[in-house]
Image (tube, rainbow, N blue to C red; front, side, top):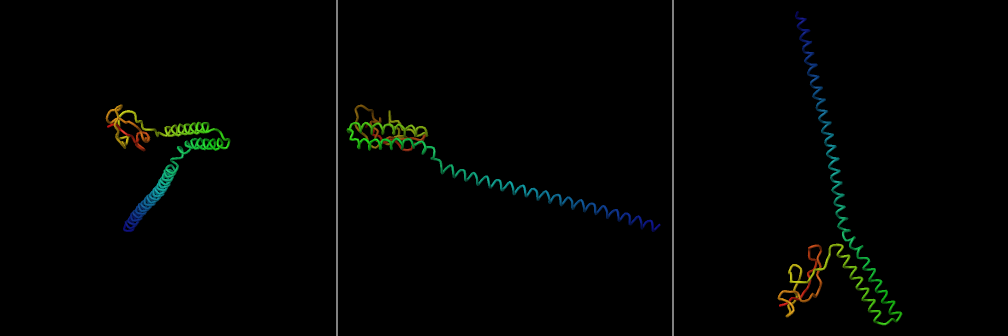
Length: 183
């Protein structure tokens, strides 16, 4: 009987050891599984962070390039005006060599300047730059009064003459018109 108890005791101890070993194996497997998940999440985080940093650098580079080449479009649009001026200058030089009369030379100069001015104004308007109108009353937001003059034909505060044309970009004043106003 004692032997049987001893065998039962040994069997119970053996069973408890097996259960403990199974629990320890499960715990170890669980820890390894968690360590593997942590490792995978760290890897995923590092890749995402690297992607974010690369995107950030690319956006900064793109922004810098956009600022660097911001005036490219208007510069290209101004090139025909330069061409017109060069043609006008060449025409004047050719006219001098041919000894044409001064009236013809002046007419060609006038025509060339008018074409160039018209071309420049169209280019500026295409990019949102327009002259400030001076008809009507004085507006301190758009006009800069540089002198006051007596005028029977105009009411007080009304613009009499424009000394220098002003320009605005959309609704922002680039340069106010310099005007004289009636007293």
